[in-house]
Image 1 (cartoon, rainbow, N blue to C red):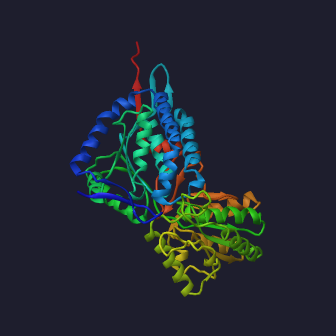
Image 2 (tube, one colour; image 1 turned 90 degrees about the horizontal axis):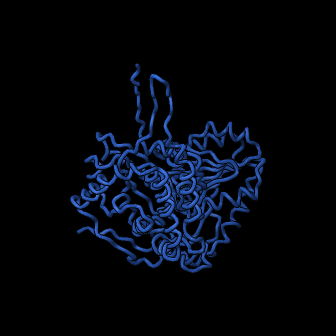
Image 3 (cartoon, rainbow, N blue to C red; image 1 turned 180 degrees about the vertical axis):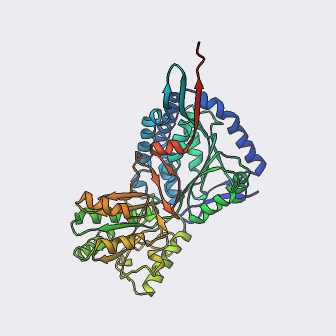
Length: 461
């Protein structure tokens, strides 16, 4: 029997483990979801929406368990209180637009014809969720999928093994039928086999580029709809008219919060030469104020990375960049908790360029490179010099300038004077190796349903 194991970054010990389902047992889960889907979809939309919101409310009631559990599983300090703010905001917003997003598109309703396009649920939605924001990333799909009339099967990353259990527990206790929303433990082989067999009508995956490629290979020939949010190397660009203090505060937070383990975290920053020196100096001071330590300590502001192997990648990228001429500016002596394992001090590098993996490959840790630029054209060329495209953060007082530059950035979202935020009213999407599809907003509902056309000729005398 294969065991799915979570090794806690807090102390390097096994925190939780669960047996992976066999292929036959997993097929039974799928069969129950398939059987339950039609009845679930026949329920009035408002009933489905309210049951989802009750599930959200029930999870909020479990905060005393959920928050420390998250710290043990992936290292985020309890000081930050879990993911409830974004989790609630996204759930409430999609609930507020569900009726409009799923309403029929009326073409004609005359004495002779009724013509319309309706939105129909795909059927079974399979959500493969990541560990870095395990509740918020899951709810992006779970909430609108259930509201739209799909059944949902959730598989969480091994690093956040207990999150799927908690989500399903909350929703079922709130009244969502058990077969409508199920949690499942699978190894990679069984996951691929289920997808290859066409078990699901829609698969949403958030994770690595290689993971996305594996999902696409498994789904090849099945015509299963896919939503893929993969790697990122999100840039910030600070122009000469930027609010310097605000830019430092937001971009440094975007680069280091959650130990830099954010899908849309800032990993590279381009600063106009007129502000470069001041920006670097203030950024180093900002980052140096973190307290690295045990995430269960309420005074800790920076916890360990989720696993020592993730921290190893960050250290290797930094060492490679320094060997090639980069300069590390944050004094490691300020962070005695850095143990060479999962506990990793934040770092800022200058004198970096795009020949370094640190500036091209996803780092996914509390480290960022800062580059001096002379013009919008230079910054734009560097921002687009990446295989990824999730978000870009522009800092200027000129909305038209930001819009003009934004149109030329190869990215899914353009921010102006903010970063590292997911607005549920806007489509969350990426380009290039960041993936395809989109979640949340009206478009998210449309991706979780399919159009069905009605062309009805009425009987006339």
